[in-house]
Length: 120
Image (cartoon, rainbow, N blue to C red; front, side, top):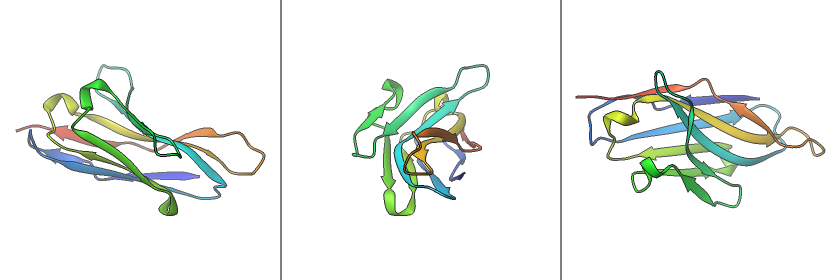
């Protein structure tokens, strides 16, 4: 199983970016999908998560600015980030809980990370 992220970059404060993460390989089912981030000198934190039923959860710091959504047919999850702030600068990681066989409990897989830098 491989998770490939894209969409990071440098953006000015107030700008927008969309992150994408696509899962590939032998996948039987996907449960939750999420985005985490880690800024220098800080712990990795949950940014947003979405269940396979479409329920979402957001960190308080991004509510109203970020939107997580998924495309099950494409085995992909996205993070639309609007009104970006300098404090959103971090390495963003995709996290997917999935099973590779019918009898396997879901386990976590991580992407390699994509850098988001918000600066003027």
